Length: 303
Image (cartoon, rainbow, N blue to C red; front, side, top):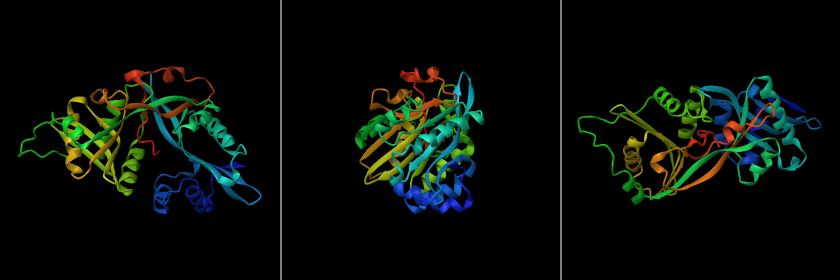
């Protein structure tokens, strides 16, 4: 039986998440305290034991299309308890999510497969490859080379941090005119920032001379992972210089970038990231045929 979860189910849902994904109790609790909405969660309950054995969350997102924004949903943390797998439960949840999206007038469903084999799995339910990232691996010396063109900031002028409202406006302005790009509302951005910092990450923001840029960074065993970097091309060296200064002992840097990013176009490899489907069952041709620098970007996906 598929239902919206009741308050009494929360501990079971947290336990299900921990069993399936192995995340820390602190991380899981942070999500349920700050992002979880029962009306945006579908749960499969085994009626014989009256407990949830599978779930998925539906996070609101807008997709830019034809000069406007299309309300859509992001399927997140879809999981089934190991002893209930291969029984068609997740198929029922996904199909119910698509029907619910239609009822709510949400045009698209998007999800990030946790591993390559799942791209084919989601293909069974109408999802098609759409979103790609450019993944770039750089040594510290490489990053220092790329930051050579950093602006010389006068000693009397301080580089300033961007406010959250400025990050939101800048990100929207950079992406909204590009078909297929994911536009998160201010609440979603606030959670992305707070959860990243709560997990030990660092948001580097930079505003100077009318230019802006930011990067979501986290340090793991001497390697800095930059999971989102949005910046105008001419200001990129200045932001990269700030990243270097922020991590003086890091030896390696891994960037996950929009394919359109011209500054890095000669570096890294382009990899599949997320899939999309229309909730009405029609083919989302206008988005899945975009390629090259027009390839849609789905950042801040809480993957």
